[in-house]
Length: 305
Image (tube, rainbow, N blue to C red; front, top):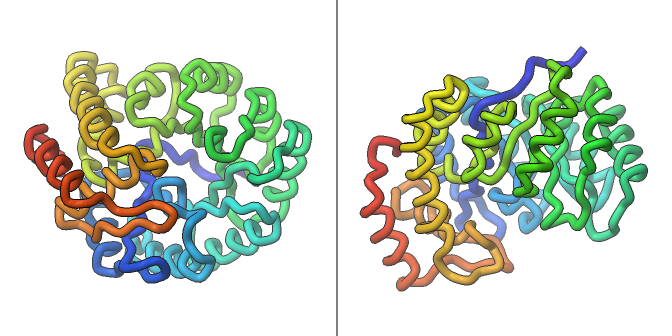
């Protein structure tokens, strides 16, 4: 029997760091309380926004344990277990289970490029052995392979596979998945790119795993509610705010880390956690930080902090 559908706004939590192998514990506590106070519906630790693949196994295990203790049952916690090794992913799923996580999330294994049949076999083997329900994570830009619509449909039939997080940025693909699974009531389909949240819900999606909700959780929770209720006037106002965040904060600098340096600099400016990134990425310098501060102060987002 599948568990209750997970839907709404589930922020992919930033990992607050002191240095390359030490958590910023004070920042972690502040960040989790800030996110929960924003009314979110869940929390995803150790995703792309959490820099999971740049962190040591020790730090990943510790983060899951601490985050779940801080959340203390207030919202579901999803733990990212993506790895090149099937055994390491499964071991991490077992650890997350013992810590009290609600589900685990996994991309296809990366480095090698499996075909769709191999992906199906991989995820079925994982779901058969995982003590927690599994969310599929479609992230082709990072793992070099896309989960085809037919593959998602096939895997959705497994009792222990409960959803898909799609970060492909391909709205047509997302719509095709929603259409193919419209009669499957206990499978969640969540969007990654926040600028597509409104359209994804209007299409029939169930929410979003939204990086910007680390900063402004109330904004994205309100957008989710307005979209579910088809409040078009409110949706348009909120979408303008979301697009300003994407264009003003995430576009600064030329790091291969994409929006991560801007997001962490913004969280530091908001007094939530330290501005430290895991290598190979580096925190913004003074010029970029001043630009982040100026743009944040000019966007009139205080009511959503």
